[in-house]
Length: 178
Image 1 (cartoon, rainbow, N blue to C red):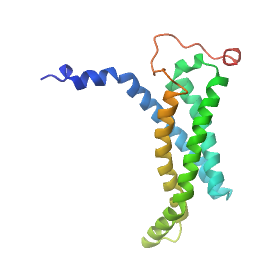
Image 2: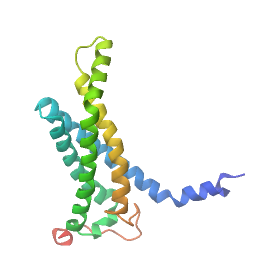
Image 3: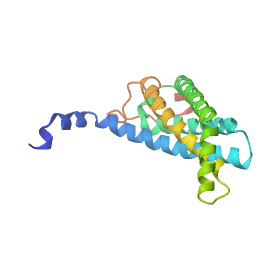
Image 4: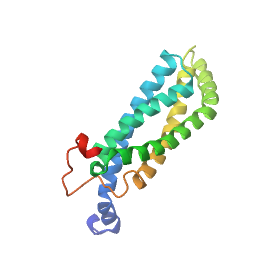
């Protein structure tokens, strides 16, 4: 039986724009996560801020970057909606994501740091447990928040917009977004 005649094939083909959109969303999220980690580690380990301040700083910078790329690449049709309407929705959703992030870090960082410190010592090293503990905890939080952000932003901020469009998307100007 040829694959093209199966229900699974037709279902997958119908979902192609959403799959493509999710892949783009994941790429944007991945680049945002890199930005998040860089800012997090600079604030925490170079400037010696608290983990909560470092998590917040990294998250906010990454969220702003993600808004730009989601609006311009993942959901280009969304540029027909004014930023002053879209950005507050996006920021509110991301604020909930930040609360999720901070909660995970608050409850999991200390036990994860103890676990990583013990592991680092077991392999003969004296340093790295604190760094690993925070970064692994942040990875756990990032996975949870990624699911939250994709689902809620898809349903609210970028509702009804797919990654492809038959209509050309107008270039943004200051007048068009205000």
